[in-house]
Length: 417
Image (cartoon, rainbow, N blue to C red; front, side):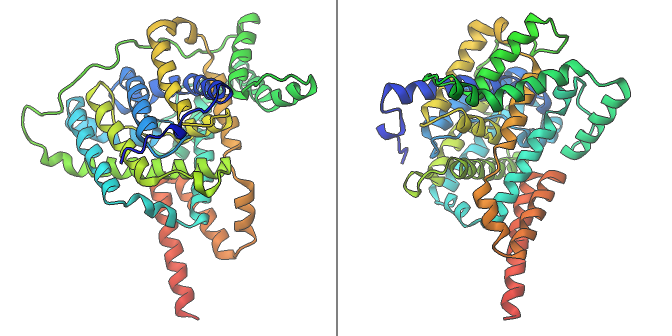
């Protein structure tokens, strides 16, 4: 059932080199996100990094997607915050193991295949929502201010902009974002103009050159800052109180989030990379990998892991070919934490924001969007409503609302036919 085959890994040195470069690129982007999500969830920065390293490696090794990059995500922090407030950090190992077991059971019952029944209009609307959310989440780093208060993405974004206007916009930080985007979107043209035969991943080059520019011109911008090194500490999942019943419902919520976000992320990655049907991800295998990742990460200093849509798309855009890229991402993160933390802590946060904003623009699948726009008015309506709910309320609510709307419209048409 584990489905680990030789074909899942690089077949030659050229593919291996591309996977390594894309893995390094994703690791650099993932580092500040892992720290941020770990802190936001209330568990700590080290937990975020542990999840990216351990959960990311296990999910990429045993999962069903060759592009998926897993780790802590913004959606998961929303679920974890009230759980941590109610039960404390000590409940996370038990909670993660229970949630992971549920996800594995979904895999055993082969329920992952249901993701293929989600209509394209809903998936594309969800994808647009993701792109907007990724961009909005970068506003604090792009504007050089602290994140605004609130629980919803739009509210946080509004309060962030309001705060930036009140205290004054940090123009040097915006300049760094602009430089990063210019390099990211034009490096391929430069390579083609000079007829260079080497492979230059846009995100990696943008981060490297932007960091170099900020140091040469001594720009006053914030960097990633301190990187914790105390990761991967084993914690028993057995509670001293022996009271596991109150954890069941939170664990079910986490398991559903892991399943839905991971499967949709893998499907979107396949869509934007235009893989042939024979090479598309295996949903039940993906659930198995994510369930194992969540369980193991949670008892080794981390928290529940899920497919990370932003990092997965960076992985695709950086030229990943096999699952080795996501595995390299975890290994590189471990090397950075153990040996290279002082160097990588110098990367400007605004440069990371620029890379993710650029990536969000490239998430859109123009071919599929065009198909929706020429299909029917109902599909267009479902597409926009799914995107709107995803951004204004929550990604999971967005996908559920989109499916419900699709079924309702279908029943209405059937009753009038």
